[in-house]
Length: 488
Image 1 (tube, rainbow, N blue to C red):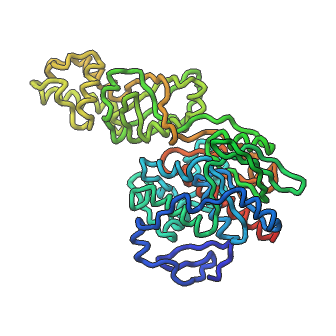
Image 2: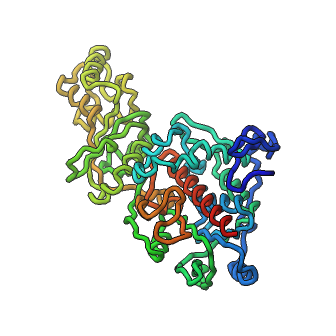
């Protein structure tokens, strides 16, 4: 197919075009596109190659250029595929301490929220990144945005669907579809994957290449490989930060982001599973004087066994990640359970309900206009110290005001953060001032590149963090390929 290695392809139905609009032959059948869930499953063993053989190959073919990618997550694998696809003669090795694409596999409840389809405009898209929102407004997402992500997966046999809130998932509703696609493309392009290996030390030698010391678990056997190009895409783990520092970089201290809130209220915790389709939640933190608009969010919320979760809480945790850490995760959450109603309207609805249902018990019948779950309405009644068996006719005007206030301005005390374990996102990493975002190359160490969560960029929930991984991996892979071509 006569396409420039760095031109890429855009998929239109079953036809491929390059970036100049020239059409080429069909690159896959319609049946394969429709039947994307039958994408050949690729096991990791098919990609294995020993580092010893890599060393031997380098000794025999020392003139061949080598790219080593540290980290087999979304950004690392995508960047490796891009570089190898553009320059097939480039040797590409991915070193991963665990299994590749683990976070992709577990994300989105096992469905993988690939990207977000509601924010195509790059300026608006950048606003969904608490760290990086100013820096990402330039050419970053123009190089590879959500539309490009959708096109790439479509061209490789995986169709995505858009849900009401903009989140995009594979039609199969299985993250395995994404994992199998990426591993298959890596294998098909000749990307070498090595698991159970940890890069412990990196230095630059006199020839301008990287000497990478790699340890194999569990015996800690160490070997050294050389690379012309290095892409660090280790996510939010400490390993990547250590390597970056060894090569002259500084690190913005990493802090957790995208987590749930612990609430000190045993009665609330008994309501685990109760959900609200739309609330307005405002986070108030001690010693924070200035007003921050992003600390008020609107959206769905869920009661858990330890407090609150859901999109509105996760967004708050992302925007307040560093502030919450500084306050030891203590603060106050003010929740408006009927954000589309004024407090006076709430009072009038309660008063009319009292007149209409005089003989009904207070706890048994909440005004339907509030759309509150029955269990939560009972919680509010008891929370205000009202007798749940009181008839509506006996509810005082003062009690109605208390109920209206609790519906519009319900206050909860934060006592800590929940934990996502393998799924949480990190705020912090390599400062963006030390990276050229047009190429993802280090401004400090030539031929060193970064992509994904290892840099000081993190997004709110909704597919934004994976989009950062695809974009950063694509730009890094493209830049490495251009450099490799110029030196071949």
